[in-house]
Image (cartoon, rainbow, N blue to C red; front, side):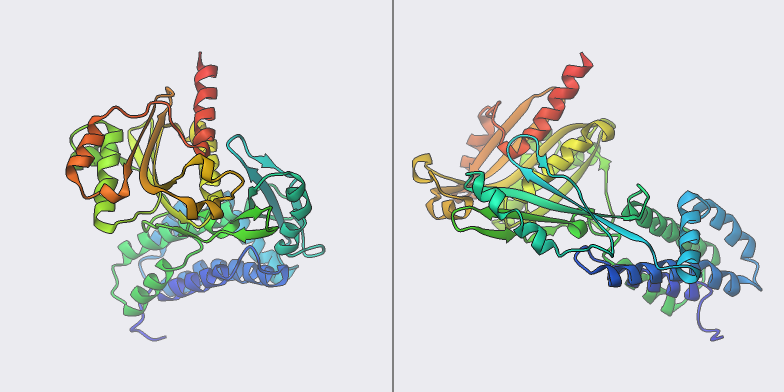
Length: 409
C-alpha cells in the first residue's frame, strides 16, 4: 500500500466510482445502459465500507467507523442498497421500471394523461410518444399547447421512487465520510482531489426536474413541437432555506414585497437582464430563492404547479415572483402564438408579483427602458400596487391558497 495515501482515499475513490456510474444514468438512455449504470452504482457504493474497513483495520479508528456507520448508514434505505448490491452481483441485473406522465398546462389545473409504464421488454423512444400527441393537439383548436413529460424510475413492482432512495443514500454517505474525515484528521492531496471531483457530480446537485422533466410546446398552425432549453441557478446545496432576518438586515426598510423589488431592481440595473426568480416564504420565517431560465413558457407554468403542490406540506405562506415580460396591443396579436407575438411587442417590463396565504395580492412593473432613472423608479415604488393582478401561470398558487383558506374556516 502507498503510505502517502490517506486512510479515506480508498473509500472516496469507491464513492467517486459509484457516482460516476450514476452520472451516466439519464431519462432518455436505453434500458440496457441505464441498468448497467445502476448495477455498477450499487456494487461500488457497497464497496465503500468494505475498503474503508480494510483501510482502518490496524488503526484506532475502527470503533469510530462503526459508530458513524450505524448513525448514517444503518437504516431502511441502507439495507435496501445492500440487498440490491447482492442481487445485481449474484442473481440478476436491476429490474428497472420507467414511468412517464404527460401534463398539459393552461391557466387552470393541469390535465394529466394516463401514466405510461415501460420496462426493458416494451420500451419506446420519448420522441414517438410526443409525436403521437400531434393529432390530438391539432384537433383541440388551440394556437399552442403547453405540456411536459415527467420521467420517474422504480424497481419493478415497487412504489418507492428510485431517485428519492438514491439521493438519500448519497447524502448519508457524504455525511458519513465527512465525519470520518473530521475524526481521522489526515492530510491527503489525492483525497482532496477526489472530494472536489465528487462535489462536481451533477446527479445529486441539480434540481430533480432538470434531470427528469422535459417541457414542450406544440404550435398548431405550423404543426411542430418545440422542446424547452432550461437553466437553473445552483447554490452548491440541494435546497437552501435561510432566515428572513438575513434579508431584513440587507434591506431594512419596507415590507417583504418592497425588499424583493429592491433586491432585483439593483440586479437588473447592473446586468440589464435577470433570470426569473421565485421567493418562497415559509411559516417558520425562513425563505428560499428559486432562480431558473427557460426558452418557452411551459416551464414557468409547470414550476408554479409544482410549487402549489408543496404549499400545504411545506407550510408555504407567501410566494413572490419577478420576471421580464413583453407588453402588446391586444388587437395586434389575435391568432398569434407566443413566438409570433414577440415581433409585435411594444415594450418590455420587469414585473413583480406576490400572493400570500390570506389571498393578499400585490404586483408592480417597471419599464426596462427607464430602469436607470431613479426618479422614475421612486415614482413607481410610491404608487400603490395593482392589488388584484396575477399572471395566469400563478393561478395554481391562488387556487391552492384559496382551498386551504376555505377549508380552514
